Amino acid sequence: MIGIYVRVSTEEQAKHGYSIKDQLDKCRDKAGSEEVMEYVDDGVSGEFLDRPALNRLREDVRNGLLEKVICYDPDRLSRKLMNQLIITEEIEKRAELIFVNGEYAKTPEGMLFYQMRGAIAEFEKAKITERLSSGRIRKAKEGKIIKDPKIYGYIYNKETSQLEINEEEAKVVRLVFELFTRPNGRVQGMNGIAKFLTDQGIPTKKGKDVWHRQVIRQMLMNEAYIGRFYHNRWNTEGNIQQKNKRLPAGEKLPMKERPREEWIELECPAIIDEMTFFYAQKLLNESRRRWTKKGRREYLLSGLLRCGECGNTMTGVYTKNWGKYDRMYTDRKNTAGAKHPGCGLRVKADEIETNVWEYIRNYLYNPSQIAAASESLMENDTSYETEEMERIQKEIEKLKAGRKRLLNLISTGVDISETEIRESLKENKMREKELTEKLRELEETKQHTSLSQYSFQLYQEAADFLTSKGEENLSFADKQDLIRMLVREIIVFNDNVEIKTF
Image 1: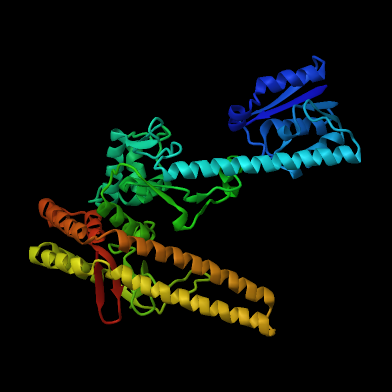
Image 2: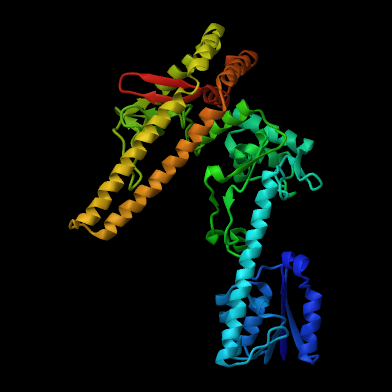
């Protein structure tokens, strides 16, 4: 039995005429027999060994089903010399390998020529990739969006190479941002929004009928909605996207962001105003704490409390206190391996919840306080970011100093395991990377937006909601939403409580 292997990628078919039909015709002529089995990889890159038809061919060769394998050209087997030699050796152990274009003698000279051809094919592939990448960057710098990014809320116009607003989807985008920034008891967090859209029967961009939390998160973080689309943001060298299509979910390779200065910013029509978008980013940074998993008992301030003594977050617990069980908030972490177990500060949930709610309700019932808060916010709306940036910068400097000390230990030959030092260096570097990314996010938020006016709007909306619904008709979820709309964090000390509003 004779096996015929052909392969073409869309790019090669368009540029070089390596059509499936042409390859098959020439390979059948070379075979000179009707007893052939065809193995066709259509639209698959030659960079990878894991190809459906090639996998079947290799399996059939190993099982002794094929006596000959005919291929149009060595670069159809692979565009990488090493992979090409692996497949060639594997086939020739059990069958005869024949090429229509590029026959070689089984001699040292023939093998040298064969390897040279493989190296040239690999070089050609690299040059094609480089030219395509350069062409895309050039077009992006001209203001063109190269291909359809498939962003919910937009359609791609091939004629102009620009994004245009899809009004029906844009309504959903605005709804997602409204539900996230002004829930008013309707939904809770990104999971709640995803469930709401699913229940409403609204299809996703791919036409699916189920929305997922991660899709909502990606929408909330997408700067295209404020008119900024980025080309060259992700490093896709090595065809990561193609490789991931062939890898199981747990083994997919992460794409890494390029340095910010390499991104190419392109304009597109905005769907969301900047104040709403950057307020959503603030909430996203704290969403993990805010939308904590529900327990058997409800805690009004869940995700908002932090111990002012040790810095740990405070969580709700139901514990025995002076002979009777009470709902409490504590900074104590009982998780095995917790880096910061906490200083043991505890406060009664009923007391602090009552005090915070009284503070919020009095605030909302007093228009003069709201106006005064607005003026204060206009003067200090970036104070939180400034404080955080200073704290992170100091921590980064400490990490750099610590790394320098570790490197000195290696050079001075101190009696410490080099493996331990290297592990410490690795942890140090990872932590610095996390902090640097956080610092970049804070710098961006501080640079691009002033949230004072938006915060004032939120205060007014919260006050209107409280007045229209009536305090006696507020549910637990209503109260929690009002508090979360206005309060960024509550710092608890031994003798007082500090409420930080947006």
